[in-house]
Image (cartoon, rainbow, N blue to C red; front, top):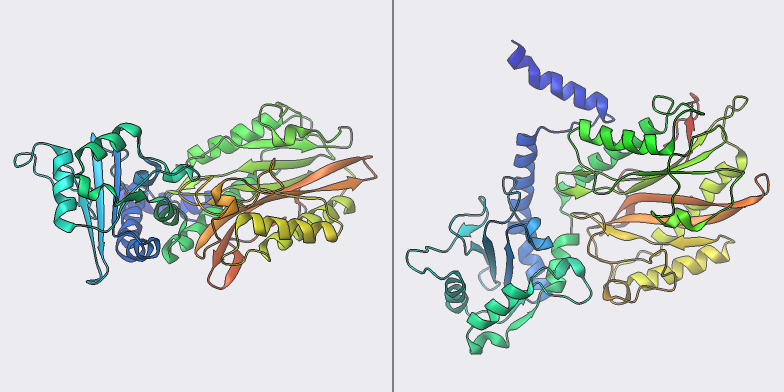
Amino acid sequence: MMKKLLPIIIFLFCIVSAKAQQILPEIERARVIDEILADRFNTLLPNLMDEAGLDMWLVIAREYNEDPVIRTMLPATWLNARRRTMLLFYRDKSKNTIEKLAVARYNVGENIVSAWDPEKQPNQWKRLVELIEERNPSKIGLNFSKDHNIADGLVKTDYDEFLENLPNKHLNKVVSAEQLAVRWIETRTPREMVIYNQLVSITHGIIAEAFSEKVITPGVTTTTEVEWWMRQKVTDLGLETWFHPTVDVQRSSEKLVDHLYSFSGRPDDLVILPGDLLHCDFGITYLRLNTDCQELAYVLKPEEKQAPKFLVEGLKAGNKVQDFLTQNMIKGSTGNEILAKALKEAKAAGLQPSIYTHPLGFYGHSAGTTIGMWDAQGGVMTDDGKNYPLRPNTVYAIELNTTITIPEWNRDIRIMLEEAGFYGENGFRYVNGRQTELLLIPRVESHQGN
């Protein structure tokens, strides 16, 4: 009887623990990951190869030194590449087919079929060349790139050995696959977006619990203790973080300093006090996708039932900067173009904005259109900011702040926000809402934050 009840107990526990979202056991996660991967290979990849003008894409990596792209292509039971793993994708647009081959001793999951028998051809490189010659592609894309780090995963040794073995007649076909690699990394499928909603919901739920009287006792609890509580909560739920959470404080007795931009300058172990404005930076990894979220909470003084009006208005100012950014996210615009327009409009409205929005997906700081950096408000000089256009079906961490002056505190503070947003064919939307009310510690029934 207990064996039959165990899955139900686990299911109920996960629902209660993560804001009504089921966190799957590992075996179910593997099934979902592999189903999504099959859909990406069979439905998404052919279109991406056509858009990039590549009919052959080679992804080559060795165990424990994986190309960032190949890590997103391995089945759920492969935690690393094995020995030297060579993947060959060949797109025949005239026949509307795509071949997914592995120059490996075994299939790479159910999606990629082994095309190498070492008994017939002992040399792995020569077998790769045989497959290339049989198909005679017009272009051979490799993962090297000056501007897109995630598309630059082919190591020098493998690059050199490939060129040494490739016949001269094919050398002029070798090109960078950076556009295809970036599109593969940044593009989300409809099913992935359903899952993304759940990820963000779980993320919001953990933040809401961390910024509550369940975790924080004013005058006792420190910011470092809240950070480690968040980290432990993620572990207890069977999830992972892709960076260590941070929690910081702004209060009337301190000046605005640059440590809010710097991990090394951020003070540790600050005791949280009534009247503090708390800020966190937190993200989780689940089903190979990542979240990145910053929210704000206010610690009520004994006589208070709500946050001070100047902080409520400050959050509204932060939401306005978000609006100026997202309304300028238009298909085909570059990150620098979006940044310049958003900053100009926000400043014209009397705001003091700073925008540093990045792609989000398989990686926390992912590949795609970069819209500013905190230390590059005049524009990003690499290709992902200057030239790479905003494309549909992509996800971003809408990350920014606005500086506001608070006469009551005789100082400036920053309203720092970050939420996952989706840019689709119909424009922009938040994946799972955004913060429009401050979280309160302790909670007040009529003011529940998000």
